[in-house]
Each structure stands twice: as C-alpha cells, then as structure tokens.
Amino acid sequence: MIEPQHPALPITRQCELLGLARASYYHQPEPESDENLCLMRIIDETYLAYPVFGSRQMTRWLRRQGHEVNRKRVRRLMQQMGLEAIYRKPNLSRKHPQNPVFRYLLRRLVIDRPNQVWAMDITYIPIQGGFIYLCAVIDWYSRAVLAWELSNTIDARFCVQAVERAIAEHGVPEIFNTDQGSQFTSAEFTQPLLARGVKISMDGRGRALDNVFVERLWRTVKYDEVYLKSYRSQIDAYTNLDTFLRFYNEQRPHSAFGMANPKTPMEVYRQTIALAINQ
Image 1 (cartoon, helix red, strand yellow):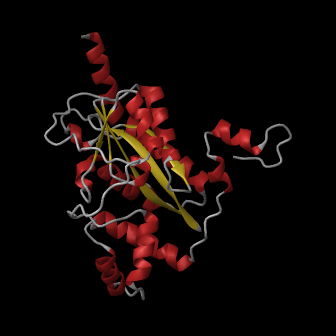
Image 2 (tube, helix red, strand yellow):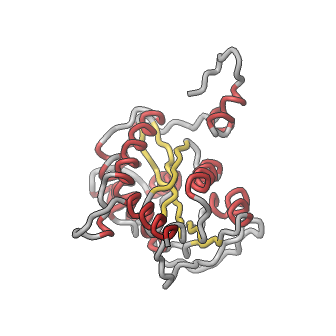
Image 3 (cartoon, helix red, strand yellow):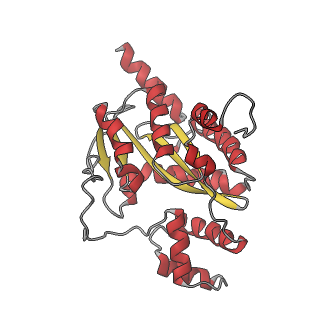
C-alpha cells in the first residue's frame, strides 16, 4: 500500500495517512527457515488445544511427532510467537515503576450491558514465508469484535490504533481488560484510556481464562479461517480476516446466545444499546 516513488507524497506522509508507524514500514524482520515456520504452525495449533504446554512439554510433543528439536529452539519460537504456558506463577519480580500492573476487576462482576467491559489480546498469524500479529478489541457482553489491526511487529502501536478506532466508532468503555504483556502495561497504551476515565483491568500472571472470551475468539478465528487457508502476504491476510470478522460479527450466530433465538454478536450489541436508549 506504500508507494516509495510516489511523486507527491513522501513515505512519512503515506504512513500517517494509513495509520502505520514508519518504523513498521522500514522494519526488516530476520526471515525464519521453512522448517521453523512449519514448526511454528504446529506449535500454534498444539497450543490452542493444550495451552498448559510450556517449552519442555512442547518439545516432547514435537519429538513424538517425529521432529528433531531441542528445548532451546522451541522456547525461542514460542517466545517469538508470544506463547506462554498457562499456570499459576509466583510473583517473584517487581514491575518497573513506569509500567504498572493494574488489578483484575472482573472477578464475580455481573456483566449485563455493552461497553461495560472491553478486552484485548494479541495472537500469531502465519503467512507464506513468515508471520504477523493480530490484535482485537472485543465487547465482553455481546462478544462483538469492535476493532482489530495487523502488524509485522509485536509492539504497542498497533494495539493503540485498534483501541482508538473502537472508541471512535463505539464510544468509551467503563473497564478495559488485557493481560500483563509489555504492550498493554506501557504508558503509550494505558495513558489514553486513563485520560478518558476508563478503569484498566489486567489478568493475573498465567491466567488466560481471566480473558476467556478473547481466547475463545482466537480459537474460532484460527480453526474456522486461518488454518483453512494459506495467506500469501499481510495484505492477503488482511483481506481474508476482514471478510471473516465481518461474517463473525454480522452473520454467524454465537453459541453464547442460545438456540431458541440465535443472534449474532453485533445484533446483540446494537439491540441492547438501542433498548437502553429508548428506555
């Protein structure tokens, strides 16, 4: 989408118009070998089914499938994909004062309306010759995906862009929940939310189920879309994911809303807001 030889618009201005960090345009990731990319695909599929697998158990699993790997290699690939085994961990380290961790606010909270709680997470998406990252903002009550972004770097910028777009289109949430990833604890991410009066909530360490609805979204996206295709590029991934997430929001009845009167996430989101306004 960037034209380096554009006669009127410099690259800096094109990046601004696309909402793309200039560093992302110039970023040249070290390419992974085809063998490593194949392993990353298998690790991703296995982790969705068994999120308690750390690098040790994942290494054993891969060896049983006939792959000659050592733990060091598996650990590096899992770190690159942003994957970590889910289990309770002791709090053995102090957080940097510039990156505070916020208390989890959703335990035993009754969630009964849209925009009461939004949540966000990041997942790995394979493409031919490499990989990218997908982040999404989801409304907990309706399960609607309010905004999403793709990036070839796992930083805070593309997460902030998704949040800003969600707020511009749907208003300001009461609570915003994430995990304790460095993207979400950074001032770049937290300060715009706090300035709007949003309460920030963060999962406990190693407790992916604290953000369970986003984890379920990733399973749906991966099994119903990503694993059925082989994206050629980031643009190809964007086109296909855009089509699928529109289908998820507007046409696919969600199991959370029962069988008697099946509704899609966006139907629930819009109807509940309209009802509240009319009352």
